[in-house]
Figure (cartoon, rainbow, N blue to C red):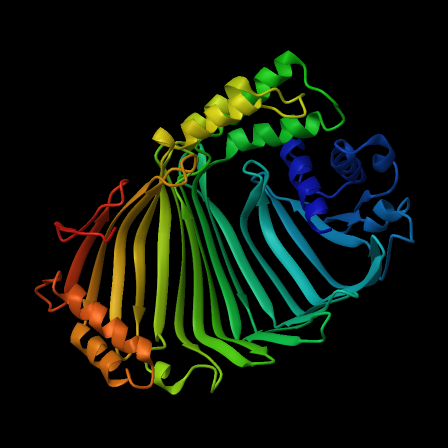
Length: 482
């Protein structure tokens, strides 16, 4: 619900003539007209948004209950929903001071098919303050805090109950060039706990001491994005676009490429625990990352996950396997050489936005061939590793797939192993308890014969598998059994 007033704020203030710092009745009327100008006529007159002059700010009230007046209470009902009050004040430089504080607590029910779901959401002491820059449709600076966050959902399928500790988010933007901005956002949340009970009454409890997130978008071209937003809003009541409008929106979308230069996101969870009927699994830390260099040709999109000190319940893993449990697991990879700009360009050249399917099946297939040069999808393994007291292995390299030819692929990876003899010794010592360990030790002894020893003592294997299935290890072809 809070996204709707935020969007209205953005669209209204960017088109609002600069108001004097004095708060006036006329200024309030102008703001309300701007806030409602993009709404359907019925909603605009419904009281969804109201603005009145306060002592030091304009008081903007957004009443979400208006949106529910025509909803059948048999399919959706909610109680506790109250209007949101935001305070905005024009500043001398054209930006706006924004402030909002409230408690939020609702309960309700909705019906999907024959199943009814009861839900509740609660936030205590919510507050947001910032300086909004209408020229970039974002905040120059801002801070949001909340406490006592909880939610519940109960249905015949499952029940969910979640609670979050105090949350604080800081966000800002800076001009990188005359046409681009850099955006940064940091969020920190205290203790998290969630309980899920499935139809069989099996209970799963998830918890973490803290959750933090860091997001950065660098080199975002904000003006073309403005044009797209307002083009859409200006035609929100239009069923079909004219040929000139189609040409216009395609020009705007092209002007927005590559949209940004870099996207970086990371999420960190500490002391993660997952309690199941089998026992409690966990990890000391878990980190998830995402990165991209924009919608361009030769684009790269990466992702990664790192788990430190994972743990499993006692007795789940046989004693002989305990030493082999990893202390750290890392997987970081990326998709490379994506021709996103050319693929989007082909789409815009051929798309009919009035049609049910903007592209024909043949055109969709052609676009896919442009997005993936030569039909190839290349995954680069940037950091794949696992480490325990008895092994330390890592892998890097590439695998190239051809989605239109499932059996066609090739791989070129390099594997490093430290203390390899310790790994073989561990397998041999536990072969009596785990017969498969004896077989594994034999295979590793054979593999060791292909290894090269690096200056730091690590064993190294470069493994190449071509599209015919032939394998080479450190340049030596491996005869495959027929």
